[in-house]
Length: 463
Image 1: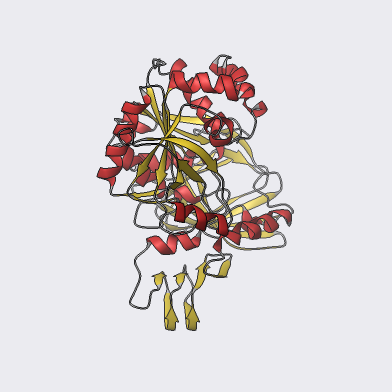
Image 2: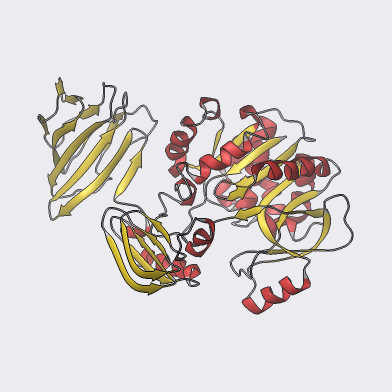
């Protein structure tokens, strides 16, 4: 069995922690490991590294590589990049094509598809359900996994099962996407409705047959060689596998899973997952509470102090604070939509931006200047580059920097500095064993990140 992990989503419902350039799967919400890392470790108990394909997009490539490197070097060559964002149906079709052409997988092979940003426990019981799905899929079925609803949630899709137990799986009568509260309450009272977990299993040949029947636009491009499919991927319809195939196919069955599952689709969902104090609060970070009950409060660098509050969500980051009533967290996506309409950078990225060589944080900026803290990983180096519109002044705070400025190469130690004039090729490297930390002061008439000409880059980035 092959496993396709979908890690290309750009979730907006956990803003301001989640941003378009740093979405939910990379967040460490319930421990020291990200949701993506937890997913990979869970899948490694089902499949070996060579059977795992991780599908993401170019924007997240180096985030994913960094996450994988912390778990296993055997996974870093199994990243498949989407040429464009086109929802789960085209993504799964691309994953299937990759399996057939690049991995020489037989069409009779079972493919298990799962998102990268869910919380599932206990893992042992989850594994049993996946192994059952592998057996059922070999009978020619498309399997979806249902979760017994714990409460009336309007943010999830629902699956209605019918008929008798066929050995742990049931025929699916219909799918309902995010019904209203009244409808959800009726579903729960009827008892044969389950949350749609977004996980699937099927043989490759069965899914190809169903794509041909129900998603001809996808199937037409799928019929081309992989390179041609990639080149024309932007022509794929933006549609989920549920709408494209699962809701139409006559071969769909559901495996109801009696486990804890959450897609952490909102701050309300995260509150339900995390451990609470004696007053029902979830407190993370630099927080002081007085007479506060039933609230989720996540602090960052600043102190958050609360008095006489109840049932609130408060999330603080370097550049934004969210304050909302519990139960209203699904509306966060509307805030993000407005921020995007206003071209506000807070919708796109954090003050700290991650790069393959490390990270940088914008500390302050104004007319003609910007101040950054730059951290370079041991052994890593930035591209050989230049800027037309800005000069840069570097002060080493920690570690030793190897600096190239024009034809000159030098080592700069703690409390020493280097100056890079405009239009001068330069490079910053960390030759040491500890992270290199510098303060960079930029000056010039234009300080945008796109004022860069790369001459050499070991990460494959162009100008």
